[in-house]
Length: 316
Ligand SMILES: [Mn+2]
Image (cartoon, rainbow, N blue to C red; front, top):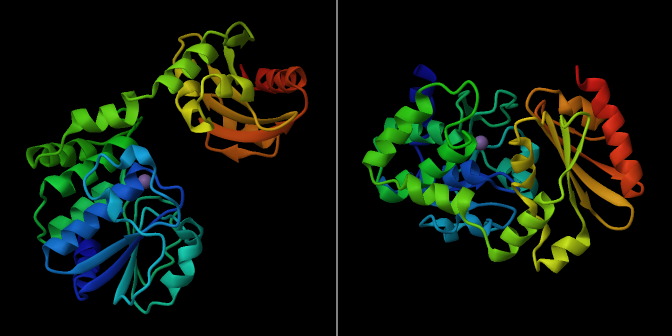
């Protein structure tokens, strides 16, 4: 790939890098930043990694994850953003980023605005596949630490190798990473299966009270502040509940309704095909075709009623 070669030649000209991943980081963001740092280190270069937000606890089983800092306090030759489709994703660190003469952008979102001096945007299932290609081009050795960081991003952004329209690319890269010591079993457990007792209790309480409507094609998971408190859980522990609801075979649209202060609800939609981006936008929210969200004010019964009548218009 000509573009990859040229990009890497330019990237390789420096010896001291700041690497920034996006705000509210996911596995692909942190994996991209960490793997690139370790790869550059292995070539005898200095690289430090930054993120405006704290790195979620669930990623700390990956060796090297504690290396992230919130803000740079020294000078760098070049800055690299990873997994950031636009400037906004870099967050407040964009002020630091744009001060540099040499800015690099490695990303996989087709919507990338190519805001850097040098942009490498390849439409892959995960940005970690692009980082892998960069490290190969730079002749960096993929050791076990790098392999685990990359596999974290590849597995999370591909939905554990299950998303629609996946090419063979994530599988081929993953195969090489496994050969270099990456532990898919551990990554899967830590990211998807592991849960606290509090979360298990919250899950079971909420899921034992799923409300069905529209001939069971619509289902609600209702999460009150009291239920969360009773389980000694927190709002992060609600992650995954909506996916469970959507996995029920008759359900076409799953909705989680989370109490967010008095008469105020944070609504998330997931669907197997219905355009829930349009549904959420009716309530001033938005997102993607199959996953979206919004806030709705009102009492619970009115909120469920409004959602039901809107979803009804979209179910053929
Ligand atoms: Mn990504």
